[in-house]
Image 1 (cartoon, helix red, strand yellow):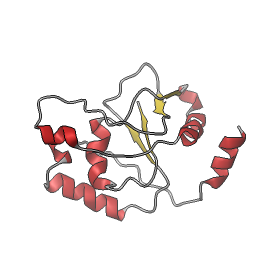
Image 2 (image 1 turned 90 degrees about the vertical axis):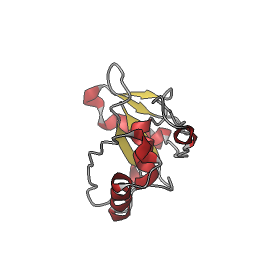
Image 3 (image 1 turned 30 degrees about the horizontal axis):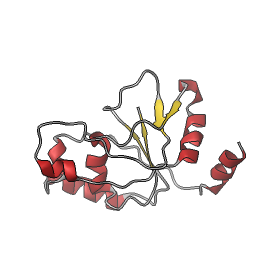
Image 4 (image 1 turned 180 degrees about the vertical axis):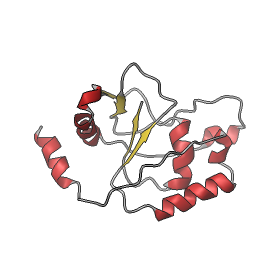
Length: 143
């Protein structure tokens, strides 16, 4: 608990962050220059400074609520039949186990569980490659 308290104290106060609903559409948007990818880029440049990115994924189906807590976030290519270029996309976002515990504490009513078996599915990385192209903050995914 001391680590969680220290992390909670370490997070700086910030203005309310926007909650965004972003449907990724065709996974090819991850590698194409089109109206969707340009809109995601624009949104990314207009975001206030962020300390972490938390994504609720429609692609990660679990019994109950799970939160990724691994320090590294493997890319999951959970789509099929697309050109090889799409399966070469990398998004080296780090996770943050301590931040995941803090988030879990905030989701006690949902009995959230920490989970290090998942990574970032295409519903997350296909958008973030444009919105936050250089992953400098932890990315956590919620099922």
